[in-house]
Image 1 (tube, rainbow, N blue to C red):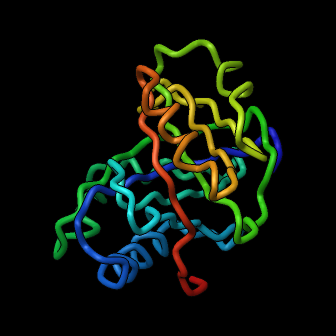
Image 2: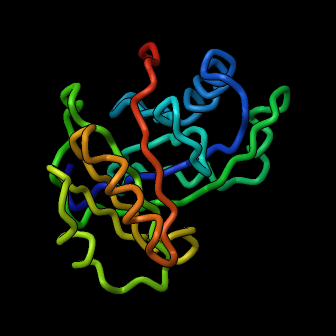
Length: 183
């Protein structure tokens, strides 16, 4: 990932299962897929209740970024399902510690940080995680000021999640990659 990259986070609130959700998500992403990078779909770890049931992460070169996710006419891409789409927006990487798939002993913890949070070093200094990716809002219309992607050993994941949830203006959850066939 380079500095001219924009990472878009699209979040989904729903109660439907992955088997029901993934086919609709695949149709949705095919409209925007440029074959330059594969979108990533995250779902919560089984026993966790997160605000967002699924998170779609799309990586673009800034010159290729498609703002069509925000096009209101495209908002009905799941008309047959009960899915609420939350456009978190496009973010640029400030710190990138890990891109490859995690080893089986690590969890992925995503924290969406409000625009009112200015102490980014607080998150860098937290204990327990092995890698941290930090994304900063690229557009004024982004829902959050930063997105933090922590890679943390499974044994420490719940403790770090609790620390983050106690901080004002943070929405956090534990996620894993969904097994999605290549688009």
